[in-house]
Image (cartoon, rainbow, N blue to C red; front, side, top):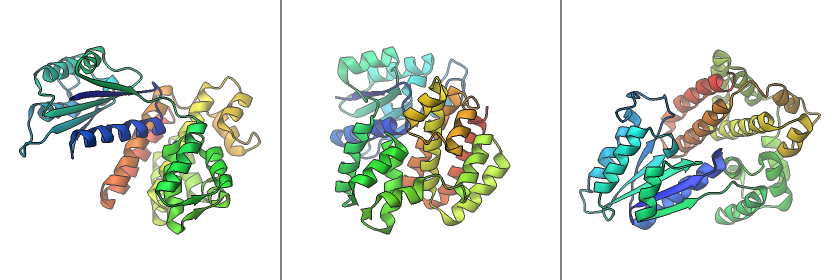
Length: 327
């Protein structure tokens, strides 16, 4: 079986995207593919070569990934992320390659948010397997905390689990970053640990950095980023930004302040909560979606690439979010 598809919610957040990527990794492992090639499909209208007739530069690498066999006799693999953003010419080219590729020698996994292009879905239905990832709930998050703590040999008591859910909601990707950071100092995590490290802290650089990004002040944000990285771990920043984007997304779709406070589980008297509500129309839906995707990619880079790449990754993320979150 060579062609797979994993479809997540249309507004897939960091948690759902992580689940999709994890499932893809499991598929490649089961198929015996050690090092699949990853293709990140840019948004429509983005990327060089976007003339509607050729494959954009970011997508072109799917061609050798599907056409070339392994030099050592094993299977080759390609992971196509954000397949819903493929252009018609790219879809046609990929379908043609799937028609000619040997499913015993190549494995393709397509990740899509919302819908998979119909021609590719038809190929997967005919000769592969399609799976769906549902929206994560707080009940799912509670079970995830227990399982993750057991796997990492950590002790997270009930109060700490409650505090994690109150702070991060169902966002297990954000929780994982927080738990990994807290676990550095020991194997036991308490509710106070969570509150002390991940509750609003207006006296620390993170707060000011976040304000600069949300206001679109690139110069100030980059200066604050440099100060932050002198003393703090990059994952703390990504965790904070994920939380900010999540709350602003909830504010954008809430009909009134009370509804927003309820669904976000926020303090209605908090200055930070009121500020998010006040600025709820500052970022567009597309800007919020781009931010979620960029944060997930930055998280993957921080965890898998050399430390020398971390600063430039965060600088690029900071500049991009200054644009997306203030337009």
